[in-house]
Image (cartoon, rainbow, N blue to C red; front, side, top):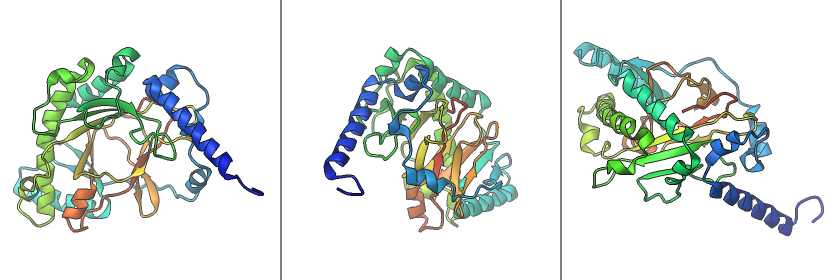
Length: 310
């Protein structure tokens, strides 16, 4: 076909890409396996489309920051009103905010980060035991959950642990490298999640137990993402732009800067990590439940030369 690609050429390109993706997936080594091999370039499957790369130049960078809310005086009636109002404004305008003095011990936060680092740093044969794309498995490890459907493979490996379902988690299902830290972190985050839902219920003018009674906090999933250093970060993406499908996301991140970004008024805003802080963002279901008052914002994670980001 003059001036373009004929159908057979296109089918060949699609087939080649699929073969490359399958070959990568079958290693069960993830993106970290690529970086450990010492590669200086990134495979074509991780290179973003030209139009997407060109679009980057149209975004304006800004120095504004997402709101930071101090929860240290949440039990004081007057201060609680102030905190609820801050959460309301942040949820309606940004859909994102950071919280400090949230009550989860620093040792628990550090333990969770260390546990995920230990999981990813261990022998590949041990990690392979958990590698799966079966979403019914309560514990699974893989690279890019949408590897075979997205335009670009994400520069990210993930360990997913589901604490949802009628049966309690069997501790033996969890990887030994992060078993204790995951259970301890999960326990604290579940309690804190209900505190947050209370604040957000009040922010909508409802009783503090409204969202909890709607079972918005019933079950949770721990998504532990590991972003290795990328040799060509300007070509790759850590996590493609998206909004979160659930009610609420509570994010713990280590101190790797300028990787998490939220789209705010047409600009990508960096969410700089604050030591000890947690990033909170509204999910699609909470936007729906709030009749659109709260915003489930588009966000992404960019790739970086430094890492790993956890």
